[in-house]
Image (tube, rainbow, N blue to C red):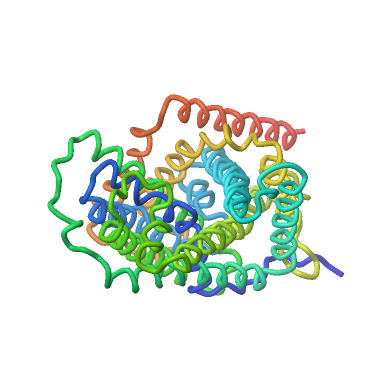
Length: 430
């Protein structure tokens, strides 16, 4: 059978939205309310709302530039068109690198969460077996078909939103308004720390356009999904913070604020619901990691930056099978070895590179020299350069909050990407 030249276009606008919501709402929403409250106290619901609006600025840039492209790769494609092959390779490499390290990290989080109910799964061969079965199952689903992958993400996204919706709907009746005020005085350092923490909490929507090559109408559906993702996650996370703040005394000292709050107004069943919801949420996040991570690897191979076999399309299922298997195998190795812990420090610089490149590409691709070279945008951000410039400010704020270890890790990852690019260039020349 002749190998098909294209991936199967089966994703709709709500599939892409589910991918975005699933990647932003991972395990952090169940843990971060106490950490944000520790920095800014009763300002924390407004902080969640404010950073949601700031994230919308970046998402709008992704939406505009994404409305020009129909292929797989998202930020990699935008950077390639605006700034050339090397810059694009670094963006694609950093996105894939972050996906596999995050996949490994979240998978280990699942083992720890399950360990509360089944202690043996936290270590030894039981942990290794659980991780292998989990990652192997997700790899099989992703090889089997994009429809199957989308349904898995959709179901797990609903599965994580239902417990949060119940928590918010029931908890709203138990909120003590007195716990939400008065608003305390907050110094600039604490406000900045909370803002930077929340920028990372809101991260993940940048993967929405990555599987655009499998979307039915990507130039229309990608902008819709990006904006819808930010609207949904901002509403959910802000409301959850209000309920947690309004029901849980001493929230700043809680390691599991949503579960502790649910225990107060719903009893043990409520705490169990949140605990199971966190496991479902992390599993869904992993399903999204392998879907989007493999597509980024495929995009690099599709454009000749990696060996051709990496971008092989399955002759029957029309999925990037080898990219799925490579992404899954590397993530599993990292998860079993524990090396993801120090590799994950590169995520701050990775996000900086991806965000700034895409926001800058939004401005560059508006220029007259790109007319006829890239498709016209079907979605244009209003106010001219104002939103992209503000979005660049939000993006570079990630750098301001990065530690020396994060900067060093990120620069090391960029250097590794540059080395890979050079080796591939030498091979192409030969």
